[in-house]
Image (cartoon, rainbow, N blue to C red; front, side, top):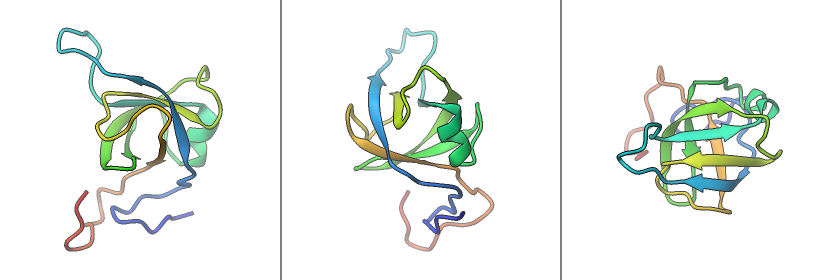
Length: 108
């Protein structure tokens, strides 16, 4: 199922709740934008482990690496270093289509 949203995202864009947010420091070994969700939630959105995804929060849309983690509760996501989202906010996760140009005047 295609969502028809700018950027050409495909799959379900059902909302998810941010249940955990981690902000890393420059000295941390593992850092950078990452989102964790259950395998069934990822499959519904047609994305897989290690893939880049769009995380759309209430203030902006960011790219992050998806990690499949079965310890995340169903309907929730765990987020690390994704700007524009905060704990308990609702986000959508979508697979980007880099082959299609976004509409003119669209800001990511």
